[in-house]
Picture 1: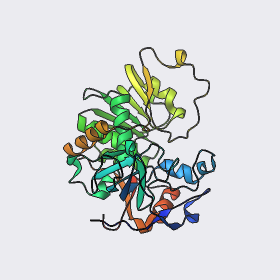
Picture 2: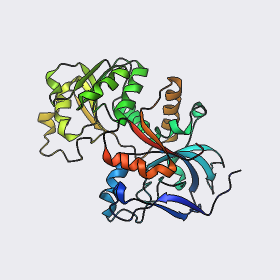
Picture 3: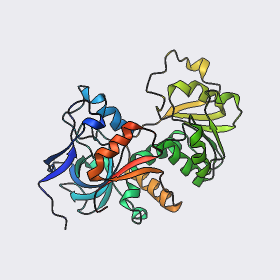
Length: 330
């Protein structure tokens, strides 16, 4: 049985913290409280959301400072407290305020509310922690966008606008496994080869005018954001759906938008955010991943003692895929 230590290593921030200013601290392992359980973190995936926090959002009044970043993790239940979980159970935890309203997963243990901790189904038992670490937030956001937002089916032609990011890669992998025809865009010609490796039917450099190309998309996953949303609405076929999920091009609002004039007749616009995951969707997602042997696209995996190197790579940019961090024996 794993014995709980009194202290743990964690990245704690109290202000703007670029990678070259970050340090690992020794902090007290948190105790359980009503409705919360302690998870031993075995793997984490880095997200743009955490970089946004470190480089500016941390100064906002709604951030509970000092704070440990990290909006997702995979691991084992170290102390279930008064919840229905059991010690040693393999779980994932993500969103629900993790890393903002309460301390997140850039640590060896995380205390999380039971309603945002999910058991990993038996289908995930064969997957190592380093693989699982890349999945919860990225694949859940993708899963919700494709099936709740876009109502994707095997008869669809899916256009992923901004295909060479973690969400884009996951969307293409799921859509291909489902049997869809897939189209993906990138702003970097050097990334076209990666899209081809993933079996994308059509890959192209985004020039901002996809609506002129008659691509035949019935569904569009918009990951670039408001800068291309108007064009995406014109690029989908009549009766199609555009799901706005990502902000690769920046999170600016869509100013001067006139829905009557700018949403073509019969085209539907929706969005998806991953704030409220549920066990049923998490189980279905992992079962699908296992059934189709989907492997996440990982840029690099670091040991926990190299967490600062991981966020340095994130700040430097230019990586391709998800950055993950695993604990020593994961």
